[in-house]
Image (tube, rainbow, N blue to C red; front, side, top):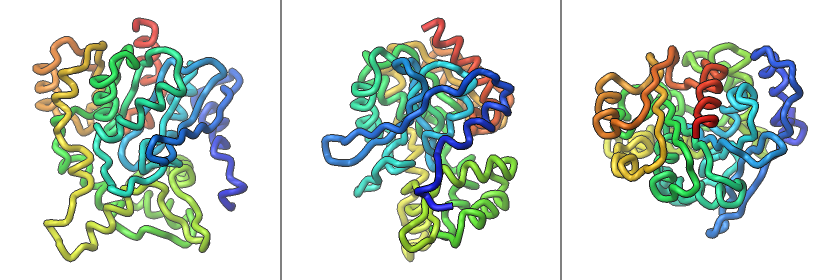
Amino acid sequence: MTDDAFDEFSFLPAQAESLGLTTPLPATERRDLTLADGRNLSALRYGDEPPVVTFLHGAGLNAHTWDTTILALGLPALSIDLAGHGDSSWRDDARYVARTLAEDVVPALEAWTEAPQVLVGHSLGALTATAVAAARGDLVRSLVLIDLTPGVDPAAGPAQMRAFFAGPTDWADREELVERALSFGLGGSREAATRGVYLNSRIRPDGRVEWKHHFAHLAAAAAASDAGASAPDAMRELLAASGWDDLAAVRTPITLVRGDAGYVTEADADEFRRRRPDADVIVVPAHHNVHEQIPDRLAALVGRIVEAA
């Protein structure tokens, strides 16, 4: 299958069926915004009405990672491809830290939403959402953070992902990439891994398949660098614990959703509570990618937050 023939929304019927949904699928479209420096920022729009919830994905993922959660939620929503991911432009400076990424999200919210959002962020997206809420509280009415706090040790949980991305940067076909993902224990079922690979890769003009996101290319380059231990650690920079100041500046309600087998430890959660005793902390039975493991339960939680906000 060529990219020209691939419909990025073709997986939605099966995802809706997995949830037991019988209602019609929401209207969907891809939107693109030219940023001030000429880069493109891309996003997915769900529903005919103005979005009430905006989703920000984690490192190495893309806007489609929220598809099943958004279907279960049943509300008009926006899901943004962060810079260097999905269909958004890569940054020449490879600076994919939360505050820099937030600078792109702000004009996107200004352009694509009509009211303050319930802003939901996973992992790197959680830090980015926090930076957005800190800088532009007028655009956010409630903040939902999925399985990451500014204090999470970036060398802990993400090690498996670092190893996965630090391999080849291109493959003969997508099936080869699906096999690699499954060999690392990623993606869950073959069906889910296939969906993730198709939505997170592209076919180059030479026919080879590569990841859409810049991070995999940076991780592979760092692993191959002669500098060894002194090579830039892209994941460590991505998950740097510089977000406590942003968290302190947030004036909207905050909810932390923590997977009981995710990256946020008890100590991390305790520190989060100490710094933001006003925040809600909810523990759910899930690994780091809560939205992919229990999308219906997460959607119900977000729906309640939307009603209360």
